[in-house]
Length: 324
Image 1 (cartoon, rainbow, N blue to C red):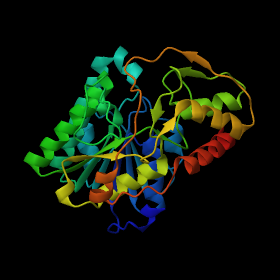
Image 2 (cartoon, rainbow, N blue to C red; image 1 turned 180 degrees about the vertical axis):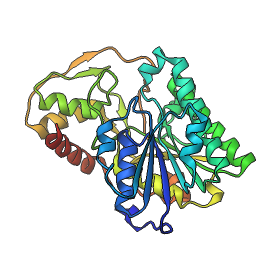
Image 3 (tube, helix red, strand yellow; image 1 turned 120 degrees about the vertical axis):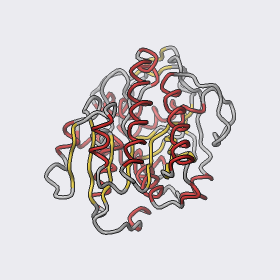
Image 4 (cartoon, rainbow, N blue to C red; image 1 turned 60 degrees about the horizontal axis):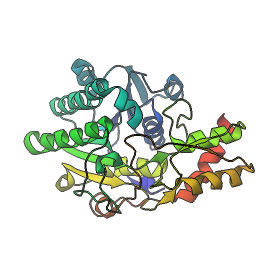
């Protein structure tokens, strides 16, 4: 994996907010495996205690149960930190339509608290999770930074807003910020349960359990599905990126395009089952097609994703088979 060659100073301390979640816990694991220190901040509202317990006995891991909506908690968490990997946020487009005020408080105000805490504690670099949802109804493919459409959900509004706040902190306060626009990340430890679960783990677990999966829409929507290892690489490479790249946003994806219906039947074939899905109406706020231009991330971050969709989906299937 390309990030195994990234070297930081001895005793480097990373703060991973949302470190009990899917992406955050994988970041914690990768950093510990590289020999560096990790502090995890999570309120466990969507993260899992089990993802904390995986590392709690590791000598280089510490956990703070706290809320990014509280500035004092953020200041405490940033004490002595070299790099912040800010993953803490509530996801899900449909849920954001039902809870716009909470999404504003958690995703926007919470991230602003983290930016301010990082500034005050003189953190070297602040890397944060944005989303492909900021491209909204823009029809152009592949999606390219600077060519966004109309935002289609409160969730997308929160992600676009934090990008602008991060830019302000680079421009006025000298905090190097790097926004990573994730495109449909999947992989180990992604939660398959609940009404707002991501489609790949949900399909896999339903098929393994003999259930009939549901597809929203006709299945002909396309996505740039991105394996978790590529996202880990992007976060760590952002920490080594030059200050000339700070204040900008970067598409983090595989740069390919998969259709949902093809993924579904590929999974049934891989799992040796024959189950026809149930089709339901499109979900409000969903984007029909998504495919990323990753040239800016390649050029400015040195991002070079190792994992193809095909490699990633095989690993994901094996992980769910062994961990359900």
